[in-house]
Image 1 (tube, rainbow, N blue to C red):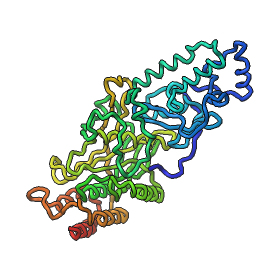
Image 2 (cartoon, helix red, strand yellow):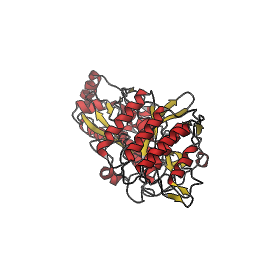
Image 3 (cartoon, rainbow, N blue to C red):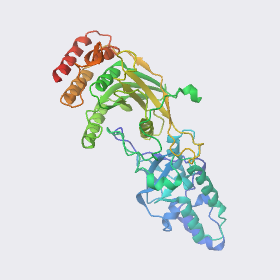
Length: 447
């Protein structure tokens, strides 16, 4: 799910490898002079040159980049520019596009090695540059392009998928943040995707948390309520605001998904409803949550991969950094302290570039614990109450609804359990307790 009306942006900064833009007359002169020994420099060979000489053709989805296990898709336009399919942004050159995409995955990346990283219909662009030189300037020094090929081999050695597996395992593109969690993982299945991973601290990996987070207590209340209703995993999204000046991410609203994770037919309708709710409230999509009903609130390898995708998606929605918060809620894990659910905010640090794909062919990012400030709301809003009643109606006849009259432990019923957990997110106005009793009574009726 992406924010409505994402405008096209022309990105001109291609880093240290930006190609020279040539006029039509200059290109013709360079081609005609090639037979007299004049050499077109490496920077002078642009996509527009290759298009005019028929070595490549414009087309939708003709260009791709694979980097650290992620795939980016671009359209080759008739003027030699590149339109990134994900956002509609226009880039002047392969280097500009490659640098932008790689920095989304790894902000420390300095350049994109564009011609060596971008593929045209599966083949490296640098090979088309070589073909052009063979055809029009056979006396050219081939080291002009071999350097880039060497750089590319180094880049491919850094990706999360080995080179020989790329075409077989490449994703069809960065997907929208949808209701259903993806199950068709493109990584080599050398590890169980359900394996849980302990969170690291930012300090343990010699980093500082790059943003601050404040979460409304009403967000926690609605999210915790949703996760308590069913023995199946649930998912929802978080709305809020990102302040680039203060680097503060404020989470103001939870949007539970009233759908089954495997129900792809209703996913688009649920997504559209949430998108409209965000728009009407002037909020942005800032994260997501899901439950581990009876297990620890720790991310699985699949959760880490999904979080990394979500982070890329939100960063790709504009031309700057925006964090994406992931939250895991564990309501019924008996390792929890007391009746309160364990709630785990986390973020994923992108995998490092400096590893060998042969040694670590299935590398994931590093999940880190996010320090959060919880803001106590004064009262329970009508929006939250309405969402709670809609959730009750949705799960009322579900076969996996929690039986609240049963016991969670010898002296605590499931109803006592949910009441006790939600009391930790209680608004300052104690009148909310009467409102929640009405909600709980509706749950009892469902049994």
